[in-house]
Length: 399
Ligand SMILES: *Cc1c(COP(=O)(O)O)cnc(C)c1O
Picture 1 (cartoon, rainbow, N blue to C red):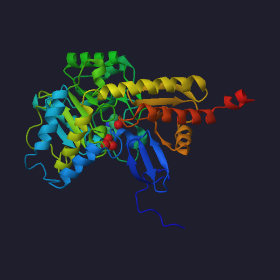
Picture 2 (cartoon, rainbow, N blue to C red; picture 1 turned 120 degrees about the horizontal axis):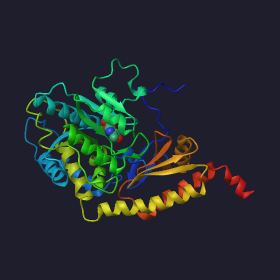
Picture 3 (cartoon, helix red, strand yellow; picture 1 turned 90 degrees about the vertical axis):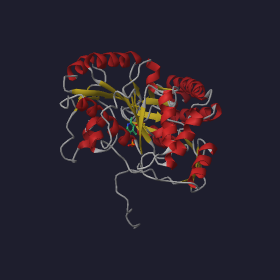
């Protein structure tokens, strides 16, 4: 018997080992090529081995990797300036992950009220199906029993309401509420976009009640939906926003963005990180933005989204016993399947294509934003093939 793995048994990993990647393609140790519509869970926004990112990383690697935040880091100021100029925000705090960006967002919201002499206003309203990370505070925010079980008392101060129940939401926002925290498009929850009109209503409710609005754009941000950030589709903006995944293109990087008013409580000493915003991360983050902010890039994402959606709708029409619904925006797409979503993910894997399961029986398609139309059509044809294999009507039609 092979010796047990020395790793924690926290993951059910697919028995696949990849050696290298190039754009939307991965090559396994046994030399097989896979079409990557998982992109490291929406992280490899520019695909694998993007030459501009590789060059930025190598150039910085020869100079300086890490300093700590005891000193000024010009790369942080540059990336923060570019992010704040492109968004609602005035301030940025860099982290190494999405959960840490959320921790910063939650602390920032609580400190805002504390600094105004309203320290009792620390509660945060969240939504069913949400996912905000795996730290103790973010599992409390996400509210999923399966992630909370066995880890002691849930961190206090999170009130969860149904995904789409306005009356419950209004009732949940009280004088103790510091903020409403929401993903403009739920990722893990099943690629569920919040309607633009609902986001506008949330903004109005927050303005009326002096509540801060926090967006978790860890998955939906950085071009994924065809806008720099998903909430831009609605025309409103939050007070605080957590970003990660796509912003590092594969380098661990996150950021908490806020207006200067919302960040007013975060004075010296209130928060910190050893690694966050180190020169290596900043070099890569700035290189990712070079590409995403270039003329025509987001338009490319929107064009490819159209190609994908038309193809997926056609597959849905052909195999209604396999695919129930197409969801999502830009290149954050979901297939709600009739068959178990894991069967579709496994079927795609057998056809050398990677996808990601999500809640609500959804298969997530999160290709690199740099995908070409031809590669998209290749992906669609593999999905079509798997749908036809899973379809019970196939035999009926061919009989
Ligand atoms: C992935 C994700 C997180 C957590 O990010 P980590 O980098 O895994 O800590 C938080 N929120 C959303 C919406 C995510 O998709």
